[in-house]
Length: 443
Image (cartoon, rainbow, N blue to C red; front, side, top):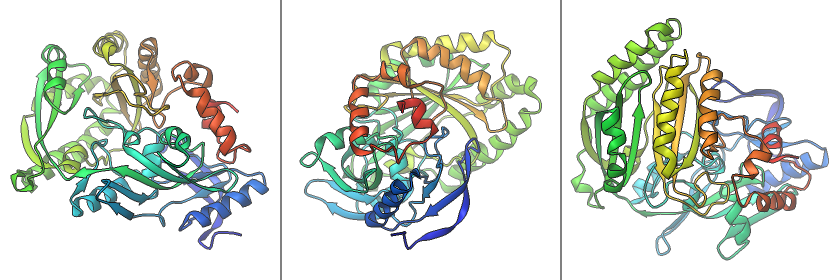
């Protein structure tokens, strides 16, 4: 039976960065797991594939539909709160920003999160979205239960007690094991973070990086290419007394985070695409104009920021011990090239986790994220940086641009074979496959 919520076909899809698109799609907007299962069974019987595409924030083609597209927007919101166990269950189409706002009203919070909150829960955990520092950096490491529809149309629940092997592997499932319909997170009482943002020189920032990460709960650093300047961000937990909040004045938040970081930065980088020779001077000026600031606010308003400037991104996780040397080598390689890069390089760290396809699986990790404006040529830059991080056993972020294939990825993940075996079990007919998954997982 067809979903009652069907859109006329053919329809088209395009991801946020504009790099990936598809057309001629049959589109459904299911409201529950039963409707998802009906669409999956019909697609399987007709030999077609199904992909769920949320907000399109993956830069890779991981969510690119080939035949049938599921839109998750009708499956949004929190459906269960267990304060005794400190667990919250939400529909998988819920945007992270909606989850964060609802948790705040409940006096609850995730432990950690990335700096963008537009993604759906399903998309964010399936691609390994992560923050920096803390006891668990990745969203998937905070998942304690889930429900998904398999490639045979079965609705399957997974937790520590029920189908634990599915929970273990499906937390970062790449959309290859099933369509997520609910996600259960471990949560904690709503807490404050004290944010301290400070410009530093290259030598000072790298020389004190280990000290900063030891002293603060969450550390993020940005290097401006063609300069000796860094911006450091250190977030420290301040407890659950919300009366101690000291947020940025509204005008300062608008000036720094909306006008300067989005409106002005977007206009500047777009203009620099037409005058790349001016990029080094522009980066030096931008880095010099950055001033220190500090404030205290509830966690999600410190962790996340708005990103209106459309960009392209590649991110790799290298072993924590190799991170600073990998960063130095990336700088040497970039400076030896003729490339002019207007976007900062982002540096984060993560503790090891137990999620088999997480980039931090069983190793403390150091993340290097490379960005370009959407209209700039990212290919040469990313290729140069990829060779450096590959030499340090780098694992690519599944939702960000990279060129790795199944054979090379298998060597980086000790449980890769277990994941493939579970895929054979849950999606034997490859109903959820697409070109990206065939590249990174094989047929």
